[in-house]
Image (cartoon, rainbow, N blue to C red; front, side, top):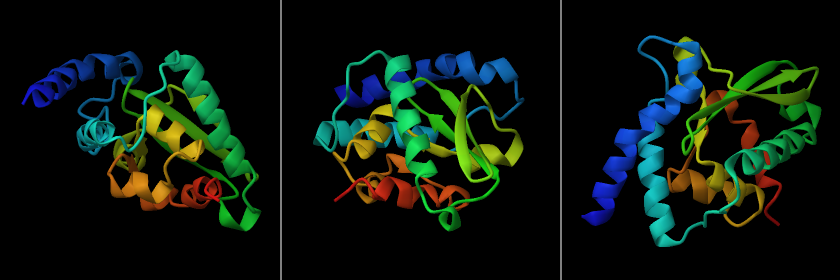
Length: 169
């Protein structure tokens, strides 16, 4: 009961954190992916079960490293396994930040605070930075994260799964 109350309190406070990123681009009625609360609740459960651990490193530093690693993994993929041109979005639930990954001529680069518009919001990858870090470090597999509902990868971004799966040996 105590952890449920804490989770609800954090959830009530969460929209204010989202506004720090999503609020910069005021999108009436649409600011976060619909899976956000489910992912946050699942992250809480996964932490209690010891599925992964939280790194107590400053957020901006950790996010920069993890997102650069994801960018590098996708860039290393064979050209026929990823879009030649396009984009996908990642929504990070712990601090409420969007990241846009633009793909040009098969190379990907990420940008901070790029909020998707319209229905693209629910096509965003949704996860927590510590979950993504644990997957990239090989502490948990992509499939474990997806099964635990702590990593949501929509069909439109499914090409990211093989990049993350190369980590497990």
